[in-house]
Length: 217
Image 1 (tube, rainbow, N blue to C red):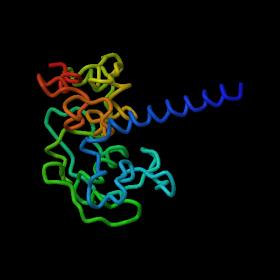
Image 2 (image 1 turned 180 degrees about the horizontal axis):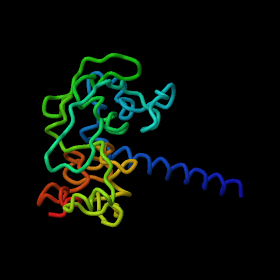
Image 3 (image 1 turned 135 degrees about the vertical axis):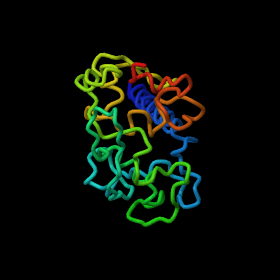
Image 4 (image 1 turned 120 degrees about the horizontal axis):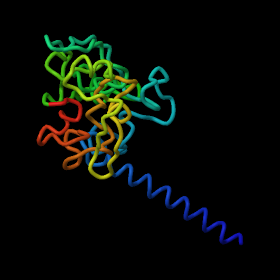
């Protein structure tokens, strides 16, 4: 009996490790895998953004945060046809922009100040006027006022290719009811499409699929 119980515990532990390896393998090889970077001592995958101890407790939008935050005030998107009230990026988007606005080095984590800045191709800068608006509430009222957007409370979408998730725009794409960076991108490369999650987009860009998920055109 004792041997049987021990074997069961061993099997459970083995399955848990296998499951975790599967998750790590999703991020591994993606654009957010910095394990092979020269500045990443020990080849750790998660440490650039997360740490199990002594994390930044001021960050409520991601667990155990380890990367230096930016303090940028952004120039926001505007348009004559815009019905939404666009504000500064929300907390989850600010975490993305802590690398992607080019003001903080990628290797600035764990209290250290790095020197490796993000590539020009992936640097959005502090002017978001030329990028899809984020930081605005996307709800039934906005969809009705705009007239060319689906109601996020009822419109179903599917994100990812393998695995996939299906649910409403509100459930799968919005953070606190708002459009943020994570509405179109999965930073952990889990529910993405394309080779190694190119661009880490949650839906295909071909045929403007990612656009018409929300825009009723």
